[in-house]
Image 1 (tube, rainbow, N blue to C red):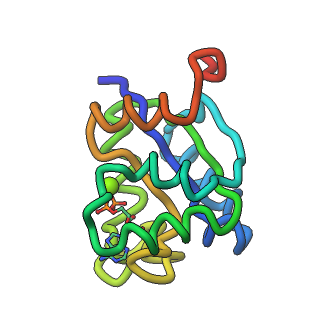
Image 2: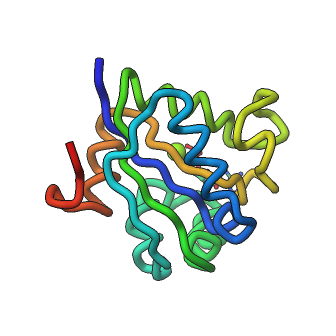
Image 3: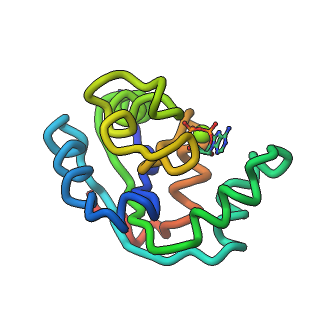
Length: 139
Ligand code: ADP
Ligand code: MG
């Protein structure tokens, strides 16, 4: 099934010059970039994006991190794109993610883990429309 998912290169990845490396991995695994932009989120914009995590103890720290510098936002498309992109990223905690995954190779901590990916079709729909209008996605 062809799906779309939201990918983010988080501030730690952009700051360390990993934009090209992350996109290279995405494209070489057959996922297509359908939309892309670089933005510096405000704290409020980061809070809106991570609203599902509002009650978590790390919410304040996470949203400060996500608004500390620019991020790259992308809509990815492909066969089972949601799981395919999560497999490329690896587990949330870099120390527990599989060798060869982006988070294992580049993640600095469970919070500063370099990339984001949607976790289900419903969250992918919310997350892609949170950042992109229909006009910004290419076919
Ligand atoms: P994932 O990004 O793998 O879907 P979650 O949705 O559980 O993980 O968490 C969202 C983000 O919050 C993570 O990518 C990470 O940046 C941060 N995070 C998750 N758990 C923790 C934690 N225990 N401490 C600090 N930050 C965390
Ligand atoms: Mg998540």
